[in-house]
Image (cartoon, rainbow, N blue to C red; front, side, top):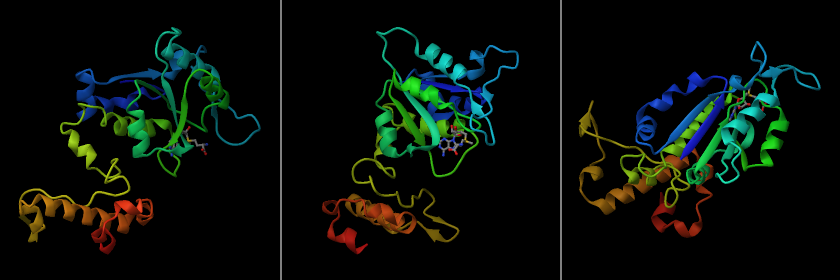
Length: 248
Ligand code: SAM
């Protein structure tokens, strides 16, 4: 997968050299390119913002550098595949695991990191004429810029690519994973030693009885979801709940 990120703070993306994503980049599974929006300015001050039409506080990002940046990154060859443009914004649709799964199937994504009061709306309208555009929010709060939201989305998407996680099964058992965990949060996890500060690992996890372990994990997932996100339980189709689920 190719990912282009356009930003005024390219240094923000240094963490993409680390850990799983760093290794995926080294092995060629992921081609991530970070671009400085100011490369597409033409004045001495490399200006990317101006005052908002209609008045009011703050500044708005100018459409010209954004338009030129996208034109250059996307290129003009009509035979090449067109990327999907992702615009992080608090006014976007919620970014969820389901969207991460879908976006992980795309060959090419471009992220446009807004700052200040956001990007002039004509940039988005112009891009929509040439490519699919998704305005996505990482939560109901306002960040200072789209960089941290982009890091969140790139990480959630990248770890779903085949070969990025050491064990492909681990994503399938995570909270929100399609299938049995789709509307559930994962319960508690444990490792060695079996007793730590007088606290024992639940004996069922040491029993070697895989069926009983699976049942315990589902019970705990149901309890964790009921405690932290009870509204998710209403989304489980009734035919996916057995008698024991209802008792938990
Ligand atoms: N004036 C905007 C509003 O009220 O919706 C907020 C702009 S915010 C200060 C600057 C930039 O941060 C946005 O353009 C967007 O790129 C990013 N951003 C802020 N909160 C975000 C969120 N919850 N999800 C995704 N991106 C966010």
